[in-house]
Length: 112
Image (tube, rainbow, N blue to C red; front, side, top):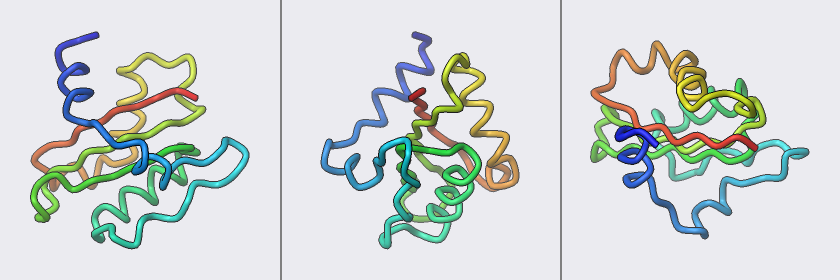
């Protein structure tokens, strides 16, 4: 595991209870975005859920609320057989316009 992947993984811990809110079985659609999401979190969630057929997705504004840095945890069947770099590239390509206004983004992907 690369240094960057370890850093992203170590900073992206979630409680099991939080994951349950955003996890579905592969045959059912992803749960709607959390009502507590900011507009930025909701926008990112909807783009990724729709385009990547996400079975688990959590988007968090980790900038303190200003929308300049996000943490994304996503599981998708489309990641299966893809390298970690390719998985991250799939996410960043979908968010390319949003990323232009950010200072940073943390991505953790999982193939299901």
